[in-house]
Image 1 (tube, rainbow, N blue to C red):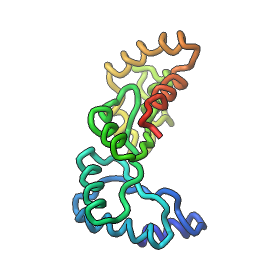
Image 2 (tube, helix red, strand yellow; image 1 turned 60 degrees about the horizontal axis):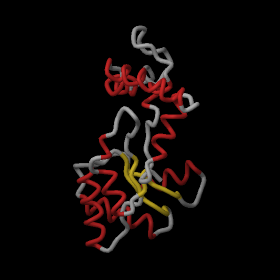
Image 3 (tube, helix red, strand yellow; image 1 turned 30 degrees about the vertical axis):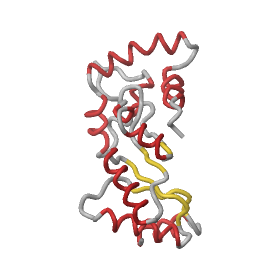
Length: 181
């Protein structure tokens, strides 16, 4: 609750439209987390709640617990999703579609790899997402692999054939999924 109050002060506003839990907290009982979210929604400080980087079973459990307790439930989820990372199609997207949970994906251009501007032989360009701060190595681990570059090369002619840049096609592909909100 203190984090919400601090955010309201920093944002200089009376309420937050969407408050998302960035990652699943295995050290806090789920019911405690859900009750805290209920409190901030009832107080009017937050309108909607969501989560980011939760696994399907974690979101399903949260929805079930919220419904059992008769309290606010997750309105949205923010997963990683792009042409190079499609794992959420197996379980998370069907869950969200069936339970009416909004999906706000991040990394639609794979940290910039789907821009097509990176050269696998030269390494990540300084100042790119692949070199910035503590996230740089994480992005390299996710995307800076031979197979990813091969896929990007296979996508180039598809984008050109559609009269789009690789970035335009990548974002359009994500948005074309009817479960993406």
